[in-house]
Structures are given as C-alpha cells and as structure tokens.
Length: 149
View 1 (tube, rainbow, N blue to C red):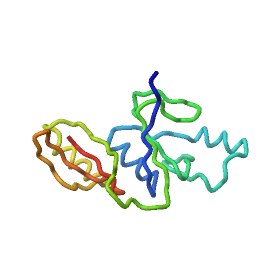
View 2 (cartoon, rainbow, N blue to C red):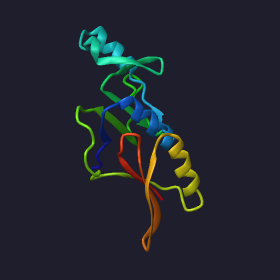
View 3 (tube, one colour):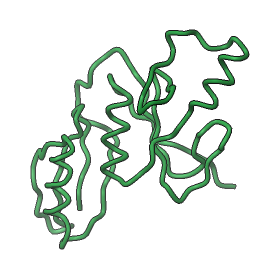
View 4 (cartoon, rainbow, N blue to C red):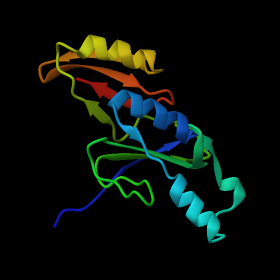
C-alpha cells in the first residue's frame, strides 16, 4: 500500500512562501475559496481566520501549491499529488533545515536557474563542486535551504 503525503513547511508568511515556491517550481497555487465559503456557511470558520490573496478568500495561516498535472479536489482545492503546504508558526527559523528540496535542472541550466531563483527572492549560500556532483545551495526568502543541481 502506498501513502498520500505532502511536505509541510513552517513559515511566518504562508502566502509569500507559496508565491515564491509556485514560481520556483512552476506549480499552481491552491484555491481554497470554495471550501472557505462552505465552512463559513456552516458557521465553522472564524472571521479572522481568512484574508484576501490573489483576489480570493484564503486561509490566513495556510497556503499550498501543487503540481499542475496532479489531480485535485474541486470542492476544496486541495491537491492529491505533489504538494507543498505552508503553515504559519510564531517562531522564526533558527537553525539549518533537517530536510530540504533538491531542484534537478541539469548542468546546462544550473546557472540560469540560480539567477532566475535569485530574481524571485532566493539567495545563494554557496556553490559546491564535489566528486558526487555539482550544485548550488540556496535559501528561499525565509532562509529555508534548498539545492539546485
């Protein structure tokens, strides 16, 4: 039996992180506005738990992105495949990630991809040229490390 999963990333600004990673990966922002409307109709959603993002109602403390080719639930907007969920937490990032993404772009595209990601707000931490491979370690706008190989 296989399991359905998502990668959850703690953040101080879920919507800014979702915007960055959607652009970085070519993913789509999930639209949860239908679910929010339904929960409001049942009286199950406090007013301060939502905000406007990209012209639609969104959860204040959560935002997600999904691969554009993967299935999703049209009633909730939630993806059923490759998905990143960003959740608001009160504390800032203070140490190196124990888990990170590797973006595989190939040696011919690595420099251009690093430059594109810098344009989106990422920073280069260092470049590595090791016997096992060549990559750039970068940080997203909140300092979460990832590699471009």
